Amino acid sequence: MKKVLLLISVCSLLMVTAPALAKTEWKVARDVELTAKPIDMAIAADGATAYILTKKSILIYSLKAGKISDTISLDKKFNNISVAPKGNTLLLTRGTMFNKSIREIQFTKTMDLPVGTSPVIGPVDARVSLTMFDDFQCPYCSREWPVVEDLLKKYPNDLNMVVKHFPLGMHKFASQAAIASLAASKQGKYADLIRAMSKNYRKLNEELLQKLAKEIGLDIEKFNQDRKDPAFQKQLKDDKKLGRASGVRGVPSLFVNGVLVKDRSLDGLSSLVDAQLKNK
Image (cartoon, rainbow, N blue to C red; front, side, top):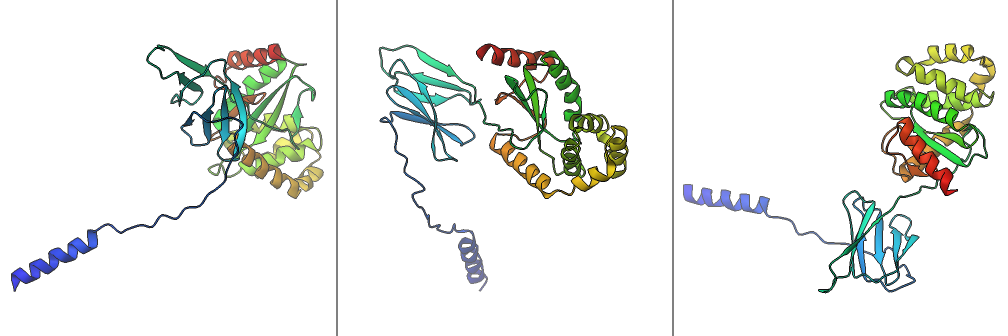
């Protein structure tokens, strides 16, 4: 009897732990017509972009948009393509026993960051635009503001700034602060309120907001009424959507004419602005 029970127990265990068979369901998502015959293809690490090697060019394919977004021309024929881990370098090889070299192509992505309904700080027709995804309760954003203001002073005629609001869920008053800044723009006090809130990011709440609004000379009754405008809520949603589409994962995130800023120091920002001015 004991042997029989042991056998039953073992069989039960095997039945429980046996892997289930899964059925794979699939469908054709889309067919994309190319302008040239593909030779090789590489996928970026983030899975968002495919680089398709053809005889005379590299086609940059956006998997999200489902279309070719750009092209890199080639003056030689290559057989293989791969993407370096950081994602901004492509490696090309001929794939023959007679060729002992590789080609390294470094590129910079330029994001399309339309101003939309965002207020502009500085000359509207400036040749260079600095876009900053910001959260008014973020300590790192607060530290960046003096640097940004120094940069604007350095290029008074050639640079403007657009703030895109990206309030984080961990900051409970960040969305209200963003809407308050947009309401202040109705009275021409957008930059003034941003500056005041950034200096007081640790203590931001409704009481302090009202105090700061008075100090910068806002008509409080109009200010509080304007804050109720549903268009501001939509603008916040649009800003966050744009940020996510542009690869923003944290704040502050800065772009100079659509190019992501890696060195947020005054020197780093200045070098990017100078490069844009030279290109234009």
